[in-house]
Length: 395
Ligand SMILES: [Zn+2]
Image (cartoon, rainbow, N blue to C red; front, side):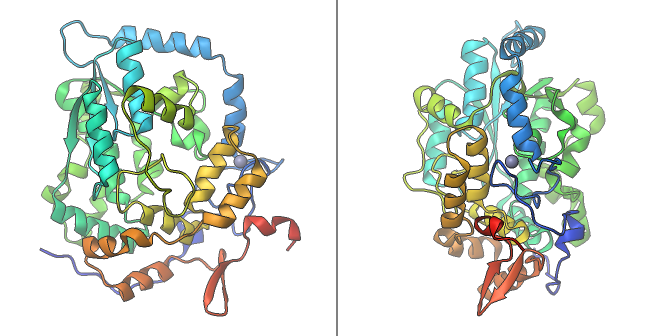
């Protein structure tokens, strides 16, 4: 089984992601206006920074009461699962599951969608998490199909991680329906925490109908039927029947609405409670050691964000750490300058093997996603037209 690739075509990033043509940086953090769906206000502050401000003023005692009420409404007395927590074994899902089980006395089923290729630390963390007191279902898709999908997503979406995002989004829903669990509890709402669609700022839930736009860039799994994959191939990536989701009274809630969300605090919490370990070395492209460390190949997801939007992994990490008050903006800019865009060379060979593409084709695909409004050529090198560290030099 294989799926032929067509010739690589130059992509129009601006219109595809509806991006502003002029690059601007938030005055408070390191994020630019090139992040899809982020909004900047008249003062030049991004929606994620505005949310961080709002978060500090929320009444967290009141929110916790809402969480207690929610748990009371969904708690079951027959020993069956009353809440489903999607969790990789990392710090965020680990915090949510541990709090729900041991502080709020719920009976969670944790559900993991397998990384493309587990790192040793990722696998150890999942096992340690399970051993700290949780039932877990690990969903692992057909490796052959996954590899083809990854390759297609890399070529046609400029993001080899899209199949993983399908699984992470849809597999927990399917398990919830199968087990008759109505409540799903996620960690933070990425759209409001990191900049995106702000319609859910004051709501604990998300609409399943937004999944395609917010998580799949309007390319849901079904689009790959046109490229030769079958419904059987795509089944694990697809959501369950909408009628079943409805009949199950399925609701998706975010812990970040009920409890003050701080990834670094989650990290310390999981070291103490779920035997979580950080990466022994920093992740390529950034300075952090504790976020997104389960998959050998996820560096290519972040790195393609750098090519498409000029937003690398250090930009994302530093932006939220500035908002969380861990570092200041100047430190953030220094970290972006130092680490953003570092190529994920450690697992490059694994990436090429896994997606069955050669190096020449790899670079052709990368170039097809490089946008003129972000990049210019300087000698033989591509450089950013508007790096954050030159923002005050005028242009
Ligand atoms: Zn900002």
